[in-house]
Image (tube, rainbow, N blue to C red):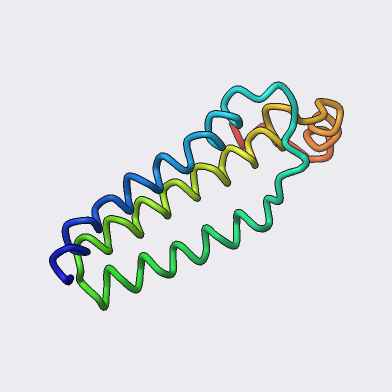
Length: 111
C-alpha cells in the first residue's frame, strides 16, 4: 500500500494545477473587477501555504511533499495576485487613483 501511494503522490501537484486553471483563466480574461471573490481569504491561504511550504522545506525534507506544497503556494499566490491586480489596478476607479496621486507630494530632488 505504501508503494501505491508513493507512485500516486505526484498526481497531487498535477491535480492542484488543473484545479486552479479555471479560476486563473477567469481572472485573466475578466471584463470587470472580481468583487465577489474574497481577497482576504486568498491572502490567508497564501500565508497558510507559505508556512506549510517553509515547514516542509526546512524540517521534513521530503522532495515530493516540498514540490506539492510549492506548487500549491505558487498557484494560490498567482490567484491572489490576479484578484488584487484586477480589483485595484486593471479595473480600478481611475478617479480614485488620480486623487491618491495628487495627495502624494513629489519633490524635484526625487528625480
